[in-house]
Length: 71
Image (tube, rainbow, N blue to C red; front, side):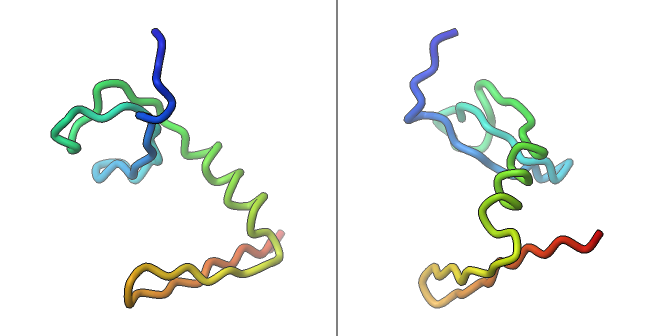
């Protein structure tokens, strides 16, 4: 299957809490094609923020992401 990479999104499954990557249908609520990528996503989070913090803003909302190795 040939996939246009601009159409690939990531999302969080409301049923399992797993991170999914794939192509959504036009309704934006269901997947045409998907793959569970939770471990890859978490590995990227650790790689980007290990031993550091970053503030992320969206409108009036502000979050802080911090990743610290504990074991």
